[in-house]
Image 1 (cartoon, helix red, strand yellow):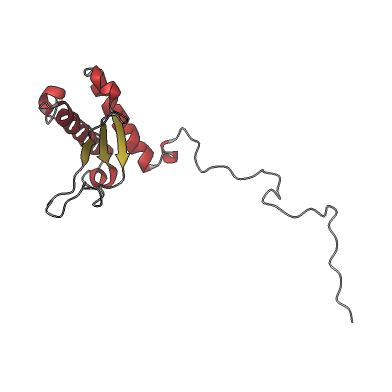
Image 2 (cartoon, helix red, strand yellow):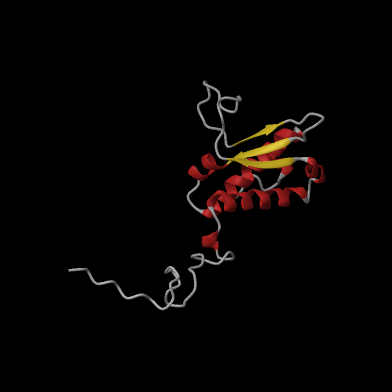
Length: 149
């Protein structure tokens, strides 16, 4: 005996997620909610805030490029074999083609801070230290509140 043929649907289109007429699922959270911001983007914002704070008092920083890198690399001299501690940032002095650059290492800073407030403070301290080294000044003269918070 032949097996029964299943009844044919009125519309022969393939079924999709939208089978109940509710539409496709959207993102878990809208873009303006903090959940939608990644840790890397939040860290970039902390560096940007710190730089903005310093640029008000040091206009010569407008020509300096600020960057975030995940971790320091050992293949280009950012980490040396004899170093006991992992650096939190570094400067790369520019040449005629490239401007001076301040680099903050995200993962070492995140590991050393427990909360967002601690992270913001540590990021600012790292940026101040690197800017002070770049300008040939003491960190306290770059930001008078350095080390007090």
